[in-house]
Image (cartoon, rainbow, N blue to C red; front, top):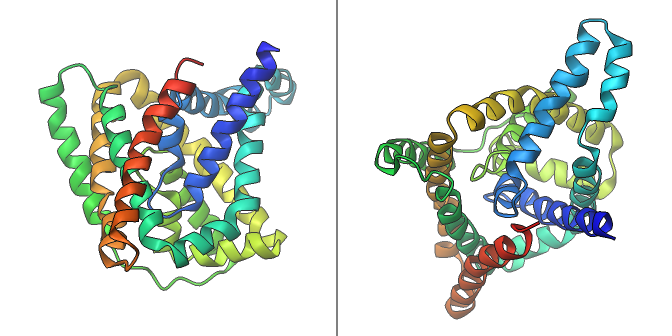
Length: 282
């Protein structure tokens, strides 16, 4: 029963991560962090390179086969299942919320991201004054990044492949939205349509590009968390605060009820503390 509960909790984390990754301006990495599985996730992805990919590239297929059992399937299977369900079932709902209740939806995520930034900075407890520099760099980078204009890229399989590689690297970082990266690359609406209409050639190429991207980037991120955790968390805190430029702009431009947007922001802010309390101990 204990194992079943653990799997269910990881599955629910996947649901939340999937919801976050669908929405431009919100990061699935943020959800992984506030629910207590971020470092395990990054290390688990990174270890796939060492256990399997490295051996396959070196021609050591037998060793790679036996190393498969060392992969953290107890994390990946329920987590990926939850993310997949969110992607497939909530793409229609997210499109509706973003088009009809734009201000209220982004106000909710404004509160969520702001609250998450406080939580992330708790991980940078050492040398806080020194880490303010990294926080400032992260803030400036994200504020500039969010202000970029959408590129006029086509939707060829090659472009989709490389867009997925770039977006997945953003998705795993707290504060940097992979969906927003796809928006900048002019692939977001197209890939949402591909999910709705089950365009399997586009989806498979996207997934393959995402797999290559996350396996490559996870090694770097895993090293940073092991050797420079406080500075990395400070930088990511700045990124999260700087990325608030996107939801703030959407809220300011919206004609939704100001009262409802304030309520949504307060609820989003409170959700982080609920998630941390419920999931952090597990």
